[in-house]
Image (cartoon, rainbow, N blue to C red; front, side):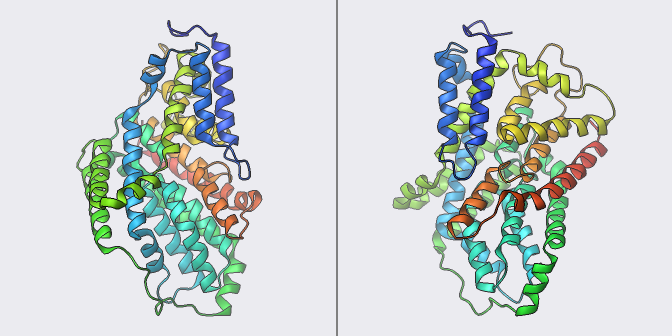
Length: 431
């Protein structure tokens, strides 16, 4: 039912909300110069102006803890980037004598681990030009390595709360601590990285074998990139302290904000430049999506629609499998963050839980299924994840085309295999 403060019809509210979510999803297509943050903000504003919800209700839907956590993570990432940490990691990865398959494996593991510790979009931004530069320097075909970066950034990010924005949403809503989340989903992340590597080695066995037969590469004689040592120690220490605080059960938003304050204060005059590296568009996007999805949830319609598809009973494998399938399909249509925002109220992790909710709603394993499926669904197509588009657009600017079908050829088997492994793992743990 619509909220008491709502003066718009539920149909109008749903129409504006769905149009906004679709605009946000298709606004991410390469070559279309639309800001997803602006589209979401326009939709949220339209809902307030049409009377779908009051301004006070709109602000109540915004989850400040999630926004603070995102800001803190991005500020710490900006400090690490400004210090040269990501350049140093890439240089270390390509040092020594490495064949093409071994280098691909090192890249997949490195991208996956970095994405598990920090936001995967940031890892994709920082590593894309470095991967292309390394491939060209070593005489390797760049496409398998770009695919490895994109697929591993998504797959590795499933492991922890801070791996990607949808994990943050789920963990905050379901009150799952950092260690519990990692204990349940880190094995899925490890298995998914193995799948990424095996699929790429199989698909590009000829290209990698041909490259391996042409020459032997070594980066051992090349000097490491310059880094700001003081800034490296400060940002690295702050990042490690933040991760330790996560592990000790400190509120993740507070820990990230404290780490951000440390690196910004320690940066001195460079703090302004570091703040400019923060993606404020992502913060605006999340705040606006909270309003849009909250207005839709206030009508009660999404919960009833989604509850018709989500399982209410059955074995653990049936519940996890069908929930993962619904999450994957919805994530493919509207992208993973809006999908999670729509599914959380229908699964017992929001204030708008329908009265008909059954006992299985609110289960931590169900929340973890949402995080797992929405994250791994990002590997299905080129437009299913922001990290994918970051890699593709970064490559295009450097003269390398990573097309839709080229991506799908690797993304489809990776997604199907990793979703199956993830569902089996979570089902084995029971609900």
